[in-house]
View (cartoon, rainbow, N blue to C red):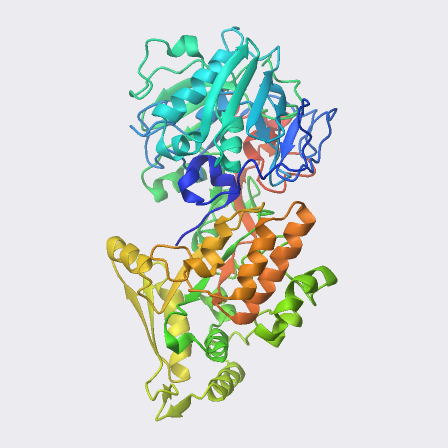
Length: 622
């Protein structure tokens, strides 16, 4: 499956988001030629120049204790199973988790906004009128752990090194930096190329800042067993390659009173453990050797967390709401094949997916039904279209299905039996309207051929889910099957659109991006390798995509997104599947946290703290 989202931009690089929103077209609402404390794509910053701290932290959080965990995500050269170098920013080796804790960056993202950043090592940023020149003024207190000041030369060195020698996922984004120079000791100026995307600025702002003096004479691409000089809230402590790495909090960190750092990074020690076997890591958690764990498998979450420490309350289990836009995952119809050309056929086939049965019998009732590519966001259409949406839709009324102008489509709820007869009757009625007939238990198309569907996959993980859907399709005479091929053949067949139906997933950018044309635009419908999996070629969608991409405000962007969503859902291009509405968190009862956490993250490592009565507990003081 293909999956993209904004929070992965720095890790993924420019190539993953083809045709990005250009930096010169973005940030339109930001003032130019004056120092700014923060930036946002639409200029709508939540926090003003004099903010004291982020709303999702507790400025009085206790410092102390420790947390032991495993990383839930990996970027660049990292490996879930092992590490053999302390440099995660190059291609060579297996980089250690946690290294970003040791470096300051020019700016940091807030975890309760989608595309806003605020000054960290940079005291301010000044943008030229054409938005191609950016000038960062460093904070006078910004310093490395040895007390030496962070200078503009360090920033120039860092960006140049990462662009020229860094991991390709990052280097490819930074190549849109045409030039970078130190104007004086505390001022960095960079110039972007004409085709630089928003991702470039986000990457520049969030890059670690390396010490030019420390790296002098060292090979940046070589395996690194010595901790590089850092400037972040932690420094590298003990580590054993392949087993664990610890990070120790820096006392009197230079940025501890900066608004973006107040109330954050409260643990005295952060430790990442490495296990090659899931069972071994889970046993370590049960024994208290790991103190925090995020679970991702519904079966494990439903059946494994029943050991004594859970029963007596020493281990807490929590469904923490996931405020991030959920994106959309589903079975895509290949509209390039004539058997799927009739909307009524697609509608009928979608009715035969029994989510309620699948969720209860395969996924432990752990998921929610998806109905949109914009789940859990303001871009998801609801109810009747409002006046602003209608203004975009009305010019195409004659070309659109009438249901576009009605309540936004939501898949009906089944009886959960796995054999909902009412749904089957409704599906057969739609198929008969489309000219299909049922002959000796076989569903025949108007062409006289039986309707056959081959679902394409490259893993047996989803085989039970497919089989449940296939059983229901066979009830109405569809000859359906699930074919698993190897990774190479799967990629080739996706590139050539050689499939009937396939599962894919897309998470949409939180700001206008031409990438969305690649998913829904007509130009990609028959372009090999495009992301337009369904082969959508709809003039109304093309027109609304242009409105969406050209949006100059959050309101314009959301209106166009909802109008687009209505058409996609009404046309039944996808049989939407499900999404997980929460993070599944398990942790030993050592911790406390702010009353209100961040919307777009769990905030565990940077906003939680060890409870005073637990700091003296076995193993918690380090």
